[in-house]
Picture 1 (cartoon, rainbow, N blue to C red):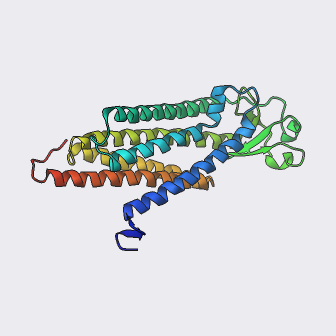
Picture 2 (picture 1 turned 180 degrees about the horizontal axis):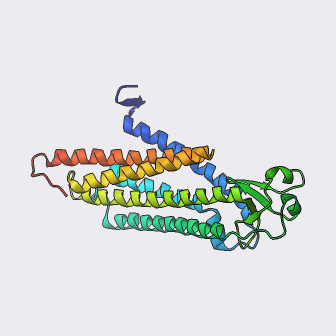
Picture 3 (picture 1 turned 45 degrees about the vertical axis):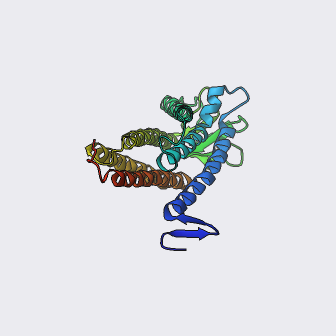
Length: 289
């Protein structure tokens, strides 16, 4: 291994390519872990009569991650591998159409999170139930901090000592929480919503930076402001990761780190691109925005 990368057979890989391989591989593994997590939760929240939208909401994380995977791949192509004249106009139209479809998937995620926030803030209390053992045999599950347990005679006395409970999944009414669990559920739901919005804004910033650099502009106040705003938004994402660590959701925090790393790679691509623009413009008047 050299200071600049590694060589495998006839192929040489620079540091940036190695970073990409590690980050993208780890993101792929995490994607399949999230599918398993969604399936586990859906086993408690869905039933045979669930509607299509209820099912897509149950798998909102999987749909969201799939959209982000495709968007990350397209950004990698656009910022590193392809130039504006390397593909036909039809091919670019297809790429932008796929990007638009992915953005619709992200909008679905915001919809799912918004519906869920509405549900938990209007969660109805269980009337006449002061102990979880009263729900044994009723096909209910108790949830605390995203951990779901079917209520049985063996565990009902140990799951919660509260005497007031709430349904957080109308109209199915399968999932029960106490007040402490409901508070955590609200916190987690807000973190999910804010995190999703922040990522979409970051995506918008990167798209604007790409459009600017497509015009062979590599410097200027506009790019500086966008870069600083992107940094501030990444700080918000780090705060979300810290909150998940606080709540012992290590997989969520690790996933956040990996996605930040993935978009850090896109930032490196943009930086390399700006250097190329500077070299190409070194004999011409400087463009700025």
